[in-house]
Image (cartoon, rainbow, N blue to C red; front, side, top):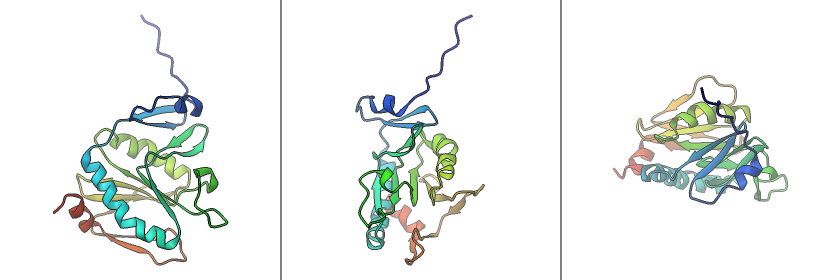
Length: 187
C-alpha cells in the first residue's frame, strides 16, 4: 500500500510565482485551477459580447475588462473571469486593481468543454458568495445565457433577449441573444 498523496494548499504567493506559460491560473479556496488557451469559438463569443457591452459600459461609466486580469477576493480566492464589469472608484476614477473598488457588477464565463464543470460547479458558488451582482455563463452549444445573482438557487436561462442594468440610475441595455449567437457563428 502506497502513501496517500498530500494535498497542496495553494497561496496567492505560490500562484504568482508560476511561469507565464499561456495558461490561466486561478486560486479558489486554496486549490489551483489551470486552464489552457481557449478555442476560437470561445474567443469569438467573448469578442462579440465585449463589442455589445463596451459602448453601453463606457456611456454609464463602468469599466469592462477581460482575462487575463485577476480579481482577488481574498488570499485564498483569485479568479480571472473571461469578461467582467466593475464600477469606478468612489471619486469617479477607473480602478487600477480590483481592490480599488472591491466588487464586480458582472462576471462572465464562456463555457468550454475543459471549463464547463468548473464554471458551473466551482466558480458559480464563489461568485454568488462574493456578491457579484450578476454571473453569466455563455453556452455556445445551446445558444443560451444562464444568469445567476447572489442568493438564487436556479438560473434565469435566456435564449431570445435579456436586459442588463448594472446601475439603477441608468436605463437598461437590451441584448438580442439570438442575434448575438448569429454574430458569433457568422450567420
